[in-house]
Image (tube, rainbow, N blue to C red; front, top):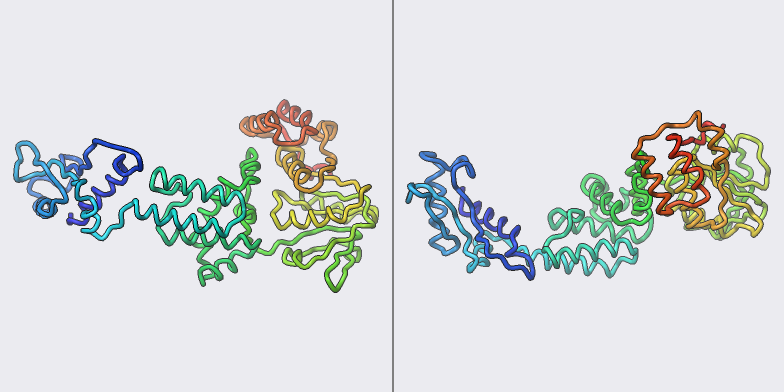
Length: 412
């Protein structure tokens, strides 16, 4: 064991101790033990023993450490080696190690500078919490763990995504001149940060047995794994600056790429009297292949919608007539209740559920999906906390009683 290895172990111990924390005092000595069993290679007649003794003696000669011999083995086997806190900075300099306090101060300034370029509140909350952790503990939380390069890379992505949704590899190429760097090095941490701070992810988080996919979580960050495709069917006109397109010609449904949202001037829904949002694609496809009134717009809602899809929904909201009825049809389960509530809160305050009542549940519950007690407990807790619209409370109570939910596909 070299002098550098010994000092690094002692400084590691120091940085984990109360000595290192702002406003804290500690009387505990920072020591490295060489007693039997604490460091197996260090034993009688082992070649490394003399080498370690020499390293310790050299450090002691420099005043960086103090040491004691094992009782009965004086001048032969060490007992403990103590860090000399009076020459702490000299110990750091001896091995070219930057003190934790300096690393913390540098990272704090980096985080503070990053806040100047971010307006998203949950990201600011995250950065504020990390700066608070640095002030109290001289360390960021586990969410911002890693070396300086890793941390700066994470911050660069959080800052870049303030521009709006973008494909993952485009972000990576622009930030790191490597289209795969983000995917290969940062995704798990970015997902953890989003799950712990993004408010809509927190609200939806782990709906019983339903877990959001990686791509859905990343979409909330504005990181797209692929271009989003929005699907709807009905007699509307999409107006761009120079052209207008009527979607009624697309008899089997119209698809719109998410990138086109930025170029849409408005969506004309003057001929629409009913809008129906459908959660599952199977039901959406089934409905649009049936004959439905020309004044009805059918929209594929999907699951936990992205910020880009919210933008589309709000564009539809601007074109809605006062007399237009807006409906949502989803699974009769916690996920469906939460999706309805989110869409009602975010976009359509007069949203009405379709085929999700207690009567509908009772018709199909014998063909329902059984759920675990943990799911039912979560449903009950969320109902008590009023996390979903009270229009579903009676149905939710029946789900808790019967232990099954109803998927909308069985209604076809």
